[in-house]
Figure 1 (cartoon, one colour):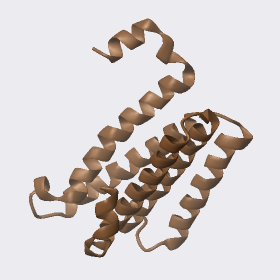
Figure 2 (figure 1 turned 30 degrees about the vertical axis):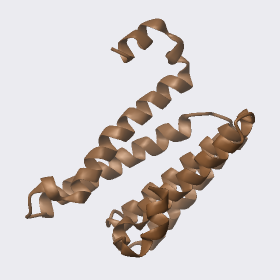
Figure 3 (figure 1 turned 90 degrees about the vertical axis):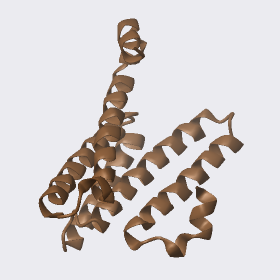
Figure 4 (figure 1 turned 60 degrees about the vertical axis):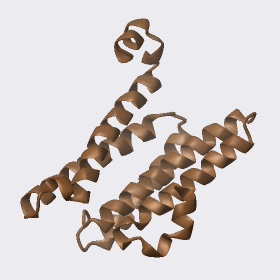
Length: 168
């Protein structure tokens, strides 16, 4: 996918360009992880950077799809809040996983709002509406991601009963 993003980037519609950016940055971060496997702190930092990039990507997708309306001020304020929150939860008060929980909840709420807007305003079948389908995927994926991050952050992953129920 990363090679396709580099070679075919001019053919992407403007609404989907953040997807290409996200694929490229994820590829670069995974490449760094592969090249430096012995550095656990670097990998943990790379995961944190990847979470920040993913949160900023989702914010830019929301802007491209009209979540922020015409207000650039609210978009930049949310981006700054995400950056400050990431710095706070990774460096000042180290709380691994809680940034993932917070931006997962924010992503689900944004996707629900966009989903409702698409349902109310679109006259075409929703099965072919890419924004509708992406929002459904965001709701399902980031709900699971947030719940998983809560379990991982609170140490519940070591409970054998929860592990047994999770993998059933």
